[in-house]
Length: 138
Length: 113
Ligand SMILES: Nc1ncnc2c1ncn2[C@@H]1O[C@H](COP(=O)(O)OP(=O)(O)O)[C@@H](O)[C@H]1O
Ligand SMILES: [Mg+2]
Image 1 (cartoon, rainbow over the protein chains, first blue to last red):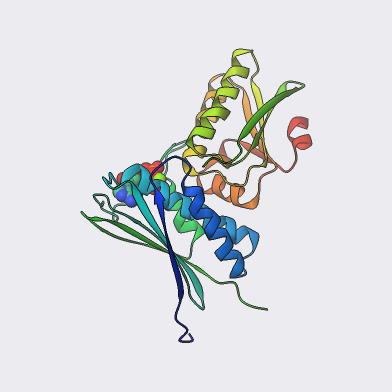
Image 2 (cartoon, protein in one colour):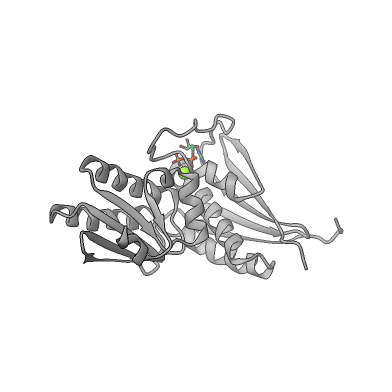
């Protein structure tokens, strides 16, 4: 690990239909700049969408916005979704799926698509931190 | 801010091929379901969903596709998918769809059964 300070940026997404796409546009630019291949870029975008729609749908936030942060580290891309809702018990994960079960896959998707997924949650809000390792340079 | 989203359908033998263009979220998923329902009302039972022009499907969009699979099971029909990007194939696998619906590389293979 070199000691380069990570490049960070942040954007505010209003809680409204389709607005998660504003964040995925930025994610795409950042991930491409970090030389992630197209399939990895799509994985990062979907994980981010799932994080944001959970904040939209479940946070119960009175504040009509969520924050999305990107941090470019030497070895990985860090993507954060912060909401200002009531928090939840992140240790109890949705149970294993029943046949043709419809909901309860968002967290499983994020965990499959990213290398690391962590929740920091309190009655003041939830901070979801996801990481994807940068592809090895040839 | 909305992306372009389009659903069209055409008949190919016993199949109705529903072609989707754009990101499938909850509202877009409902539009696909509307087209599916319209065609089942016409009496069609076998469907192919062509996702060649879809870049992403979120988990709520997939839940609506699962509802369509359930409906085809109720009337002994079928729903198959074709032309999936790797990310969509992966999403379907994680969400267990591939156990209940066939996935084909091309539309031609899907309607050949
Ligand atoms: N940001 C959040 N704030 C509050 N609760 C959340 C948040 N994210 C996830 N959850 C909780 O975790 C559950 C599982 O989320 P997920 O796996 O995406 O499935 P789904 O969204 O289909 O319910 C949600 O139903 C909700 O109870
Ligand atoms: Mg969810």
